Length: 251
Image (tube, rainbow, N blue to C red; front, side, top):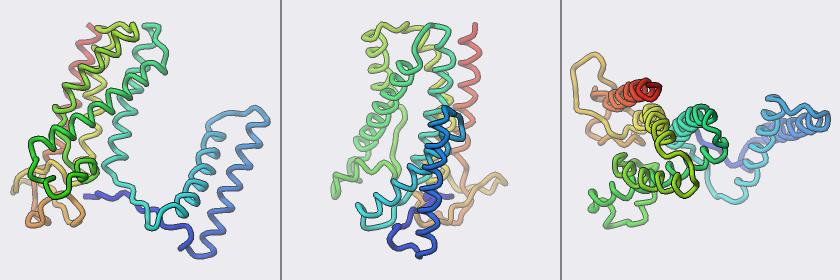
């Protein structure tokens, strides 16, 4: 599909007109945000202008720190979207329990970190031969290779420990967290589709999907062939479990 979302080119290598336009946009956004801030209007427009000016500044700074284009992978972006969806769901439903949004978000964040680490290292454990030549490749998660149940176990243990340590209601939060995880995973499975990870077998069915980009994780001999969209199967399955667990939680 689309393993690379987009590439950020070196600011110094852009045409002079493009450089000038980007600087004008960045400075204009910064001045617009400052004007709204001084007038006490901290609305969505102020946030948007602030973000634009920050991104322009970040692009210029990174161009002087890095020697090549910055590649933004769809895998990581979709994982982040899934995380924020699950975290927003948790924050909204834990407010009636009297829990601060920050505490719930921090808990969800550490669950994500521990889950990704566990999923990656479990994958490396069961596929040890892939990393004998380059052991540092264990950390290159954008190249695919996460076993989600390898992350579920340590994340669940750490999650319960954090709830007890911070004196948060364990049963209530984990009820909500079970549904939130399925929501995040249902969205996150689209990252596998974009990256060509966890692909299915060759099929003649109408729902088969084809991968053409050689940067996908699909094996080279399978490029261009119709494959079962197993990533979508897993996404639908997770979203169905989210619906069921959400209904059960209400009971």
